Length: 266
Image (cartoon, rainbow, N blue to C red; front, side, top):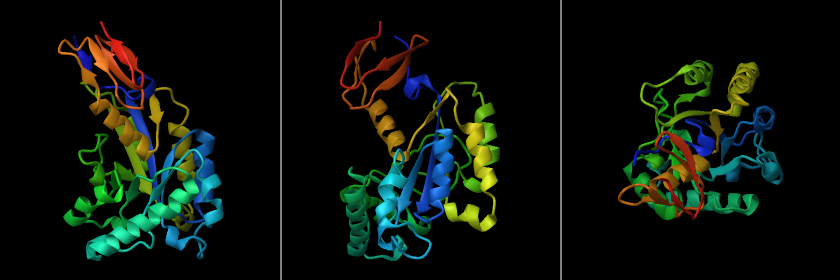
């Protein structure tokens, strides 16, 4: 039986995820814009800076980021490649613990402060409960990540309008999953006085049935669920052991494989 793993939730072939660092007060305006257009973001926060000048307060975190992902960015934003192993563990675990007390769920993702990491950091993160971490190395394409612990985004938000238009227009010759991943900082919109670009991008990208709007961890969980599907030898039966519904194309038809279910495809 012909099976293709080429669909996101709802049968969409495209997904959009956004990623914002530091937890500055300008996140308030940024979140309001995303919410108006139904977009989702992952907010990587330095819990050790809550309440400082230009940073959000701890008390507002839960309500501000409701519907989005609260994610780690270390407690005090050090260069991890120049930090001892013990310090890396302390920075990540302390940040996770503080954020989890607020979020009410396990914090499983992060982004690298200054985009800085090395092989030792990559080796340590799984033992610290981190399942993905975003870099600042934009690759300019809509491909899925090869390594979730060195997850390279499509572009910085300064380039989001051009890449967003390209994303909407692109029709690959051979259908495949496509992901537009934009990252940045809310304070940059304030510093550059260009909030209208975010409004334009959100208006252009929002409200589309052909795009799945997801947080970083939702993307990571979905990709894991797709990889976890168990097919019979003929591929006419599939078991989904995950807690996430998965969509596949079976003989050119979109099919939903519910979480925990075994489905006859043909």
